[in-house]
Length: 142
Image 1 (cartoon, rainbow, N blue to C red):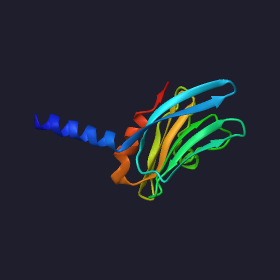
Image 2 (image 1 turned 120 degrees about the vertical axis):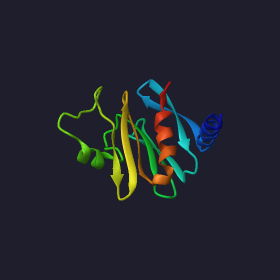
Image 3 (image 1 turned 90 degrees about the vertical axis):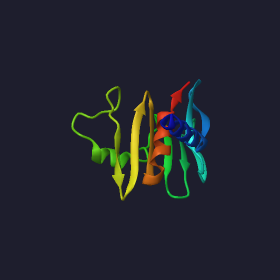
């Protein structure tokens, strides 16, 4: 019974540490909505366009952590250099795109492909890793 209470309390605290965000990515006349639980406390949230439509949303935090959602942009993701260094022969984008993650300077980073989206985080301190992991696992394409 104590374990169930502790687990329920932990889930409640994680849920309270995030804001549910619905974002729209436009491609021509086609709009795709996505939803994610974004960790609270971001200092800025921005969308980056290619001149026509938004291709990337990102959330920057005061401690340097960054969360991003990227779709079909002509520029590299925030973790592109780290992903390239972590790739093994045969890794490719698409259906078999693996999860790339690691630690750089004591801070965690991760990039995952979900359909045509690349989602990830960078510069996350170990004490906040769970909240950012929950953000990525909450990603839904509507």
